[in-house]
Image (cartoon, rainbow, N blue to C red; front, side):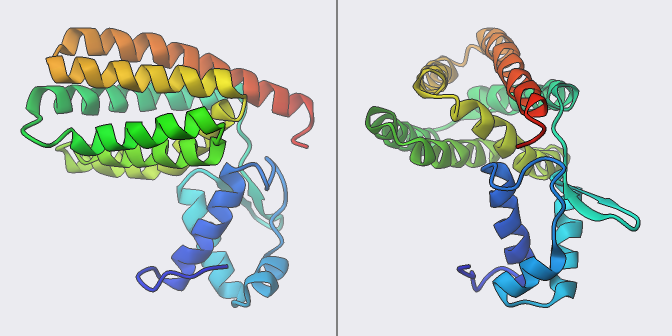
Length: 224
């Protein structure tokens, strides 16, 4: 495990487990062995417990009395409920950017799109996914509402989990996502808020269905 000096030990443990859950290395309903994690990372069991409380707030872990912590399930209904909320927040931020961008505000987005294009051409899922998450982080800077920003931050790990499940379905979904983000930026430049609303609604509905299907398939395999 590689530690970052600017993060607390508990946060680093949380991020380590968070990524394993997002990438599917730890499966829904899988029991999290605190002692094993503590030994693996050479940290105290208390630090692992504190990290699990963080992940509970991020909707990635469920903690039960006498049972301990398990990886949170992600049923089709969970996914549907998540996308209904997230798309409303995403739509607000995108439209706020369209109405208020100035000068070089969009330069970072175009740089990320270039990197995502290279990853798509190379079939690099991990690279495409990471740059896509950087795209969202950059977009979220334009929320211009601290309560909205907090809500997006709280949902970000679950957002990563749902979007990664879609992207790992293959090149078709990667290409589809890339086209959507390209078109999104074009409409942002035009400041066409009405069209942005339609784009987010239409694309989001399809994305939600894909993620629900992925969750249903995972349920059918018993989380394996």
